[in-house]
Amino acid sequence: MIKNVIFDIGNVLLEWNEDNIVKNISKDLAEQEKLKEVIFQSKDWAKLDAGTLTYTEAIQLFERKLPISLKARTKDIMNSWYQYMLFYEKTCKLVKVLKEKKYNLYILSNTHIPVYEYIKNSEIGDCFDGYIISSIERVLKP
Image 1 (cartoon, rainbow, N blue to C red):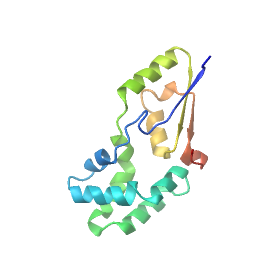
Image 2: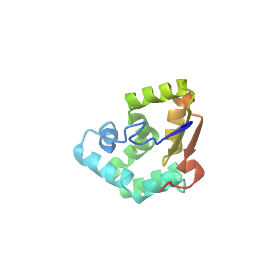
Image 3: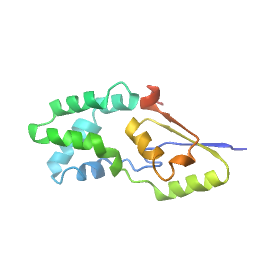
Image 4: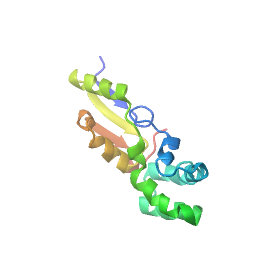
């Protein structure tokens, strides 16, 4: 009998959509592409997931790789990107139903501490019995 259910975050609980994130930071298409390339598609982003790079270090790295006109946007993105990830309504309903049925619910995800805090403080955050977050554990799931 199943007693435990494990959820991932990206594209399971929250929509991971780089385009949507950068659209909220800049209206210019060329800027959006550059921000995606330098930040979200970089090897440094994976280091944030792994917990081997701090946000302060990442901001400095990203700022060095971006044109002067986009440096200020780096902090904007790093301080707010996860807030543009939309919760999947059907998944949230499922989480609540499973919790009512007394399942133990967990999150296992390669993500950053702000995302963990964002979910933990959300309306479904209390439904989860535990979280294993790569940046906290400092190890990525395969």
